[in-house]
Length: 229
Image 1: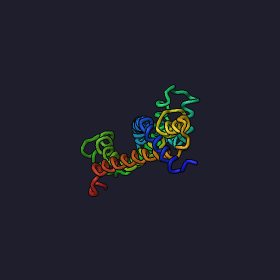
Image 2 (image 1 turned 30 degrees about the vertical axis):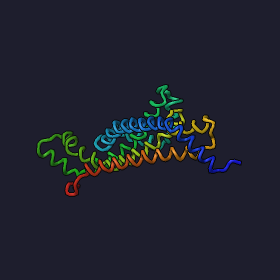
Image 3 (image 1 turned 90 degrees about the vertical axis):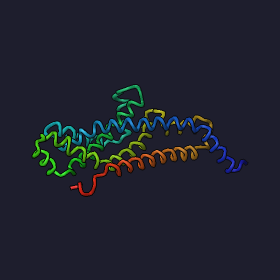
Image 4 (image 1 turned 60 degrees about the vertical axis):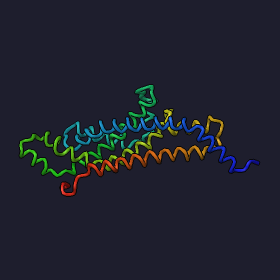
């Protein structure tokens, strides 16, 4: 009988021998996170602004879309887009759209709260020096709101990073998918735990680096206490 220590050593050797394959999936994961977050920002910030400053049917439509997207599991959204709507044959594109739209629904609430946190008196002050209402929002409110939204954005970035693993459902060759392929098709199924631990370590490093980077960004652009009113 082969000692378990020997088996574990062989399993770890198998994992490290295929580390380049897993790191290739990491590149896909990082790329998917960045494209999804950017799409979420491009759609989420205007949506948040419409919820605060809009009115009528457009505001109602944006609010309804946000409620639907936030209330629908990301797995369902992604599978609908890939298998039912078939917006693209590319799993990466579908995953980006699915994650991006769901992120937009959450980012809209981050930005909505940040916009509402800026005192309305600042808009009145801007109007008193000759700015239009739109200029007051664009030059006075938005810069402050973006700075105040960094902590919430940091949390959303981390969530999207981890949710990229859901793309395994549509066959995208990201980190988790490659890990599954490794121990199912690589003829070394006893290395399941080691592969999972290795993948978890990669996710931890990505999350840690991202959080520390955004913490630094928050420190740089944080509004001084005397300007918070």
